Length: 635
Image 1 (tube, rainbow, N blue to C red):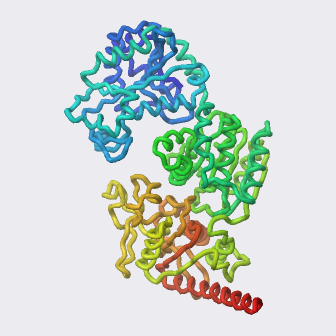
Image 2 (image 1 turned 180 degrees about the vertical axis):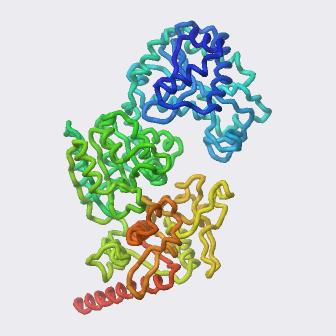
Image 3 (image 1 turned 90 degrees about the vertical axis):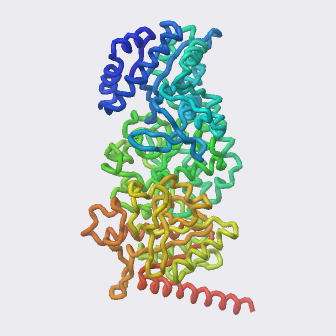
């Protein structure tokens, strides 16, 4: 969507008449349906007045075409300013200009970020060159206008209030890759920017290029698909095994062959390989030429998937974000705008009124926006009242929208070292459901320990880390989480406290939640359900807080509303103890099944600790009987 477009003369007249901001605002209301903030309107007046001078003095012809506030399709990103035209070689070019009113900035220790004063405070924000650079590469990879119409993109940033210092932080060598490709023009560089314009679009004839943008669709280019395929090839994290191959083959058959609307429901518990199947289907559908997106409601999980696919390479991760999405963006998507949408962790899709989500149902958004949609679901990982992605609900919405429903089941356990029995034992022990594994599992296949203190749990996890295993401590939401505005933006406050043991640790960093799972310097932080769901480690340590307790009088496990601090997760549950207990028990089921090789726990509630130990004694006794029987049989 282009909010404002005009010829060079038309744009200059609107600037000269001081009507440019009003016209953009009016177009914004007509096309988007709402107005903008006064500060954004002031920025248009300030920056576009400067751009009017640049355009005039550059002497580019009137047949160049100006685009302002170009909304990149299928994203929330808007490009400040584009100018379209041809160069002396008749190449069809466009220039992306990122406009900044900054006066100074400082470098950070992160490769893409700088720190500057905006919105009344100092913030870490994207480097101006990288911002324009990323828009350019998004369009190269994803815009049909660019790769089908053979358009040539250029990008730059114009900081018209910024005076360069002798040791300019924005020109630090850590940002060189971006400002070499995408130059920055500062307060005293107006003449350089004018020459840059004339060099690339100085022969005009830009209206047709703008029309190509207007008609553009977002779909991965062949070159980008080849890039993703190369990253995926031979990645050991995504090798299909046994039952996963069958599920993959079924999904591919239906997703590729059907020309009708179809909803594929893939049901599987923790560790059954839902994400491995999802990623294989995703990449192979890309290779088959489908317009496909990978949707992950949990941002930490999405970051982890991208990181693994990118082989932990920073630039690859940034490039892959084009085809990975959160779950909030589809409520305005045109019907059937995607061939396939693949939703992993679909049980965390949200209903109306959740956070910043503006729609009514994320499940319905996905189904309406795609011809084929694939939902990977585990009903018992629903942990909040606003989680709506259950098998039954998705099926009902699909039928309502005349989408044929296909069901695929994943049963084999590939996490917990193949110990299906451990997952079932956890479900039985937490009284989630009765299973055949009430007396345990094969302890040789999975290690489980109950620690007497949180320090002992921490030492267990630390030892595993020293042995080269991935290992982290997580906890239920049984402690408050100090807000960033109250001095806790980056895990500064030790909120997770167990005073009787002298134990205090911070929740995981808000600054970059996913890095908690991989950054050794953050291994002392405690992960919560919202940053660990979907992830896996070799070993997991779980603190069961006082939000869950065992009542020896009734022999039941219950949730405690007063000690459960997830404000969103407890909405409407104060007088619904059974429903509250179900969500809290589901949380601990998720946390205790994050480990591949083992799990250790500590319970803050003494009755819960004793109960878990009694349940473990049954496992140990059963294991001993089995060993004795096998020894006797062998002799």
